Length: 170
Image (cartoon, rainbow, N blue to C red; front, side, top):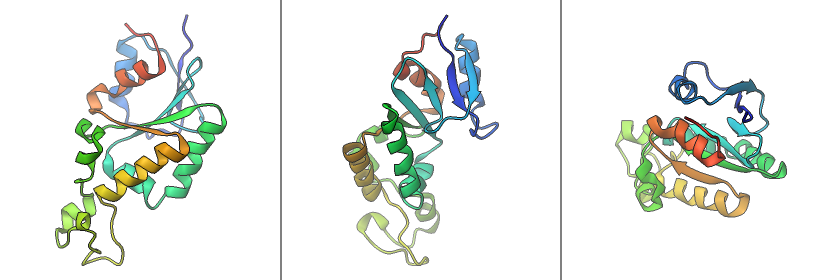
């Protein structure tokens, strides 16, 4: 019998029902435990997976929460694992050129400036995260800290988690 997929106990309740349902339907045994890094771990694999619901959540981790996020990536590396961040939105953003044209929620709502053009926000005291800056940060996190960023559709994330970690399923 295969080892169970370990799921971090700090996952938000109700936000991962589709993945949990997919695991159950495909015979993937799961167990909830506190993980030091990532949201998903599987004993024989050296990959830890952290999920983000969308690019806006990723941009917050790469901007305002950057230092904490880097510490999490480095904790994974120190334990001999690679952190793969699975962003459940816009698979086309796997092409960093497409990601460079992304605008965050704040800018999509405001529409008074062009942050991708390097403008400061006309209504805020800071410049919100924009696609070109986010793409550059992801490149540096991959290069300097060994993380990997993968974009996928929400409906495919559970299967991608299993495939990346080598978890057998029905």
